[in-house]
Structure formats: C-alpha cells, structure tokens
Image 1 (cartoon, one colour):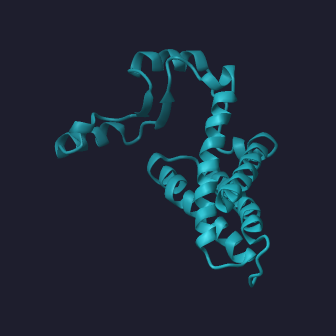
Image 2 (tube, rainbow, N blue to C red; image 1 turned 60 degrees about the vertical axis):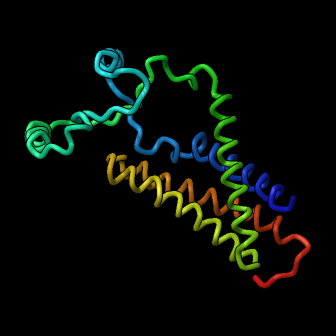
Image 3 (cartoon, rainbow, N blue to C red; image 1 turned 90 degrees about the vertical axis):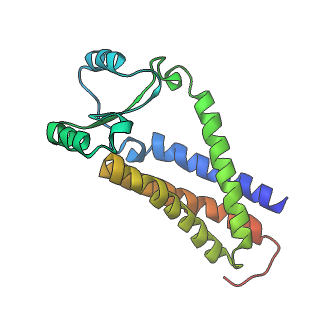
Length: 191
C-alpha cells in the first residue's frame, strides 16, 4: 500500500509537471516548426502513405537493405535530398477534437512509471536525498534510452531532444521528491 500511494503521489506530480512543461513553458514547443503549404503537403502524403504509420522520406523497401547494390544505388540517388520522418494518420489527429483520451492515456502511463519508480525507490538505500537522486537518474535513463536514439537515428532536432532531457529529469526529480517524502514518512533514516 505504501508503494501504491507513493506511486499515485509521484504520478500526479510528474503529470502536473508535464502539463506545465507543455502548456506554460517553451519545453513543449522545442523543435517544432509551423509548416507552410500544409494542404499541398497533406495531399501529397495521402498519395504516398498507405495507411496509419511512420514514414521516412526518402526510404527504400526494407527487404532491399541486405542488397549492397540496391543500397549503394539508393544512397547515390538520395544522399543530398531533404529528409522527413512523418507520422501519418489519414483519419486525422483525434486530440484536435478532444484531448481527454490522450490525457487519460498520458496519466495512466505516468502513473505506471511512477509506480515502478516508487518500487525502485523503496528498494533504494534509505534517505530522502538518495531517493530523489535515484528518481532523477531514472528520468535521465529514460531520456538516454529513448530520446537520444531518436536524435541519433531519426534526426530529431537537438532542441527537441534537450527539451525532453529537461522534461524527464526535472519531472522525475520532482516526482521523486513526492515519492521519497511518502516512503520516508514515519521512518528515521540518514539523509
């Protein structure tokens, strides 16, 4: 029960931090640009994309990656072309109509992560400061494991990647404060 309550507290804190980071601070906008000629681009995408998915432009068929001749030809034809990674949904973005389902999924995700963090922090050496540091390290771990590969392999913008670093580390530092506070209640332990 102690870990469950700590997870709820941490989840609420990290969820609220995420809302502040995305709605009140420029962290949520980092790396995003307003595109020109949106209707023309979306029309072209509707002719190119074949349903929901992530599309990389330019790209070649996955089964040809093992063919060195096809690969070298692709590189020669496309090395200097622009690059785009597109998340395509022909049915539109449901968050435009209502953010409620996305917010519910986000809270559920953050709550499960906070529950896991609470379990880890309960297993960590006692002490408020140590537990908060471990929680912040979990945020750094998440960033290194997810966002850095997206920057490296899919060329996510550096400002988006660094903003994600701030969001994750600050969020889990704050969440760790709540979790460590709850876990340490009524127990005397060294700082």
